[in-house]
Length: 135
Image (cartoon, rainbow, N blue to C red; front, side):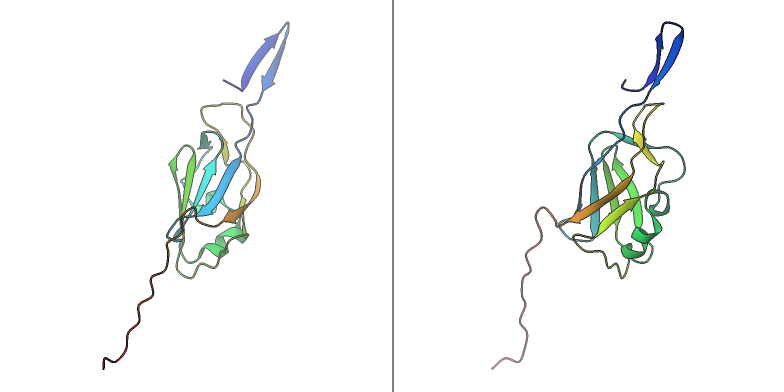
């Protein structure tokens, strides 16, 4: 336990666990999703998992029509891009404040800030297909 109440003599101190941080934001290898890795296990404080809960409106508009956001695990968030998404590498994801905190910690600081989007780890290689009339 990193956070909690600590009794020092007659005084009770509240110790807060460190806020989670984003280790990396990257496109999936197919570029249809964004994968967000956290440095520690996270949990959401309340609400139903959604892009609107997790991300600021200026980020959501870049994710296309009806993007989907959900936790794959306590350390990874997946964002399925919607139709007509226009987010690219070096754009930033801006997270809403007071949503992600350290997992199983009653007293935890919250994730906040913006993080750049990186290219896929192993992008698909295009395979050209040439069609035309045969001789």
